[in-house]
Length: 338
Image (tube, one colour):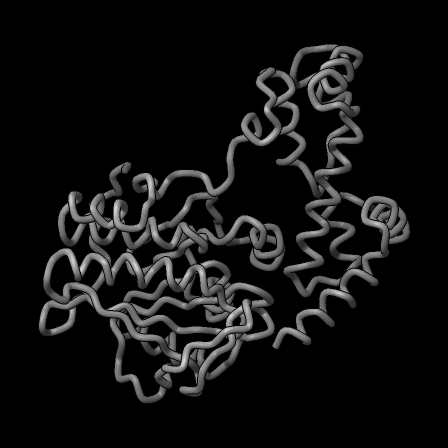
């Protein structure tokens, strides 16, 4: 596991008895996978060590059970108003995070920040922290599917593709099984690396991943393509969604002819460069429709379309329904799951 800087290595605060308590604030539609990826490694570490080094507690805004994205709910949760002053708080969110932002909770978090507490977020929990202005001047990470919408909403914040990010008193994590890598780092740091390795064995997990590992496989692995010009072209396309390059621009940057670029794409990707570029832009728009409250006209602009009508035609041709129809369907499905 790659080393973090000295200012990042030991962020968690201990209780008076030396135990490290993680307080997990559950927001509606949070990911149960992320929650268990935190608590299970900690439980196993305590068992291996034969003592309580780590403790965790689940919090909710009201003290009532919170329904996760899978429709399940834990029976026990402590109200944030009656939990005292937690020292290490992690906001657990996942789907539709902007629907679950509560001004009272933001104030509670800001008060904790004034007390120099560690404040973190898992998956899309950083939406709440960003809204509370607790992420200013901090680089953050969140689930890769939510990244496009988050960047459109908070363009001034720097967002990483890493599994988890530690910036002083701020800790953010991509969620899913990356949450286990984050707590395995804590276990390795506050106990011994051997303990973290044994926890992995107990979980039947093939070792720990570094905080700096990317959430998604490289383009080469995803597409099973290894030609450097094709990979560089795809990278350029993915980095220029809002103001798309022309295929001529791409070929010029790569110092190859347009005809050669087209031949390479047909050979390795089975479509033209313009078709693949459109696919990337449509996928980007799809993520924004799913995870943001942006208007369809704003999503069209963010995806590189000057006309909402043009965007709507392209979206329907690509996904079989209009952007409006998809958003209404997604909203109805979300409401039915709660």
